[in-house]
Length: 176
Image (cartoon, rainbow, N blue to C red; front, top):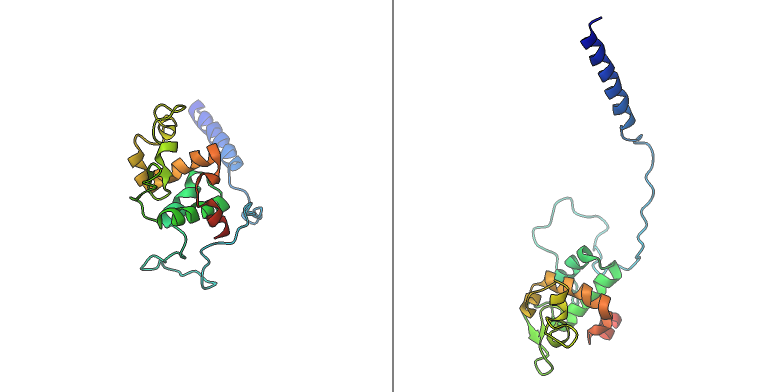
C-alpha cells in the first residue's frame, strides 16, 4: 500500500475519533432549571399572559416613577434586579427622567438624570484633587453626567463607596 494513502487514512481515523468526542450532548437530556436569585416583582408586568409574536410599532410606556434610560442600563453595569428598580425610582424622583438637568443650585450643583452632586463626586476636594469620579476614570468633567449611561456607571461607583443613601430621595424610592 502506498505510504501516503496509509498516512491519509490514519489521519482521517484520528480526525473522525476526535470529531465524535466533541459532538454536542444528546438533545434529550434536560438542562438544569435556572432560578432567579433576585425574586422581585417585575415593575413592568405584561398585561396579557402571551407576548406578541411581532415587535410592537410603538414603545410601551413605563409606569410612572421609572426611568427607562436607567432601568435598561443599570443591569449592564452590574446592578442587581432590585438595585435596578431602586436606582430607576431614584432617577424618577431626582429628575423625572430628564437627562440634561441641573439641580441643587443653592447647595452646589447636581448633574443629570441621577442628580449626582458635583461638590461631593466630581469637583476637586481635599481627598480627591481631581474629583472622585475623575480619579476613578468615569468622567472628565461634571457635564459628562448629562449622559444617562455615564450617570449609571457613576452611580455604581457612588453606591460602592457610600450606598444608595447618598441620594436624598433614597427613603422615598424605597417606600415608592
